[in-house]
Length: 381
Image 1 (cartoon, one colour):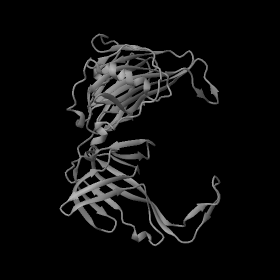
Image 2 (tube, helix red, strand yellow; image 1 turned 180 degrees about the vertical axis):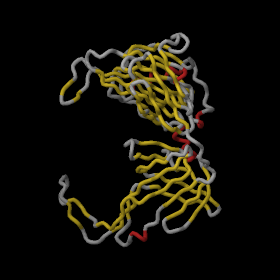
Image 3 (cartoon, rainbow, N blue to C red; image 1 turned 90 degrees about the vertical axis):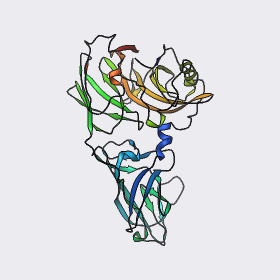
Image 4 (cartoon, rainbow, N blue to C red; image 1 turned 60 degrees about the vertical axis):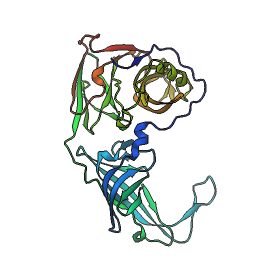
């Protein structure tokens, strides 16, 4: 098993550790691609498009109710669809802290948008974009393009006066058949959930669980995915050295890096006083720490749950900014409310669950030799 392992002991919050600069995967969100933009007034512009700023293109998908991040290289096209449009009257609250409104004279145009993305794996997703600015650099110079959830005009304008991006096409992008990741679990109990950390885009995906024995993530974008499967007896996971392409040239981890990260780790603000780093992978530009956290009890259904505790399995990403390590992001693979008397899970690591490529079908079996396939990390108690 590649990476660095650490024995675990109690973690104590000693203060606050501010998040460092965004990880390389996020800082490189501005990589350019050829693009053709068509606006609502019929004008057209072309050139190389890139996202301005550190945040990748982020959309809250309608069917998932959670944020998803995309690079421009993932996209064949972006469409801004009018969800609602009309003339609105300006207003103000009659009194601070009260909901009653007072409407003022005049009207202004207001348009709400849905954003539809066609991806290179052939799938189409729709949701509400978190406002983003793009730069289009072409023969006529540079032009800023805004993707917005809402566009508001002035009282001197009408709906016809508002100009916005209608479509953004990437002519060089080709649609290829997307491939799934799926698997079957035997001998590890009933499958409760399965998650995958997209190492290139930095978000967690959730699989569909079938008959308590199988999981299916559906069609995925190209890349490498670290998987985690929760059953009623085990937590099966993989933590690979796969990093975003932009961090691929980072220096290898060194022997003292784990100890240095462990010095910073207890200072990070968190609701969990008990937490441990179980494994470290990646490189110095993008290190991935597998973290187990637990809290003694939790509140549910208007009462405290006696004997229960809340635990998380997470991946924290870090980068080395000489002379210190900086934490970038936290990804929750498992969030479990364990009831009193419920069996404690055993956490097992396997290389087969790390850096998984779309098109892979996994068969995870408990009867496989533990020293060859599974590495017992700890009991999640």
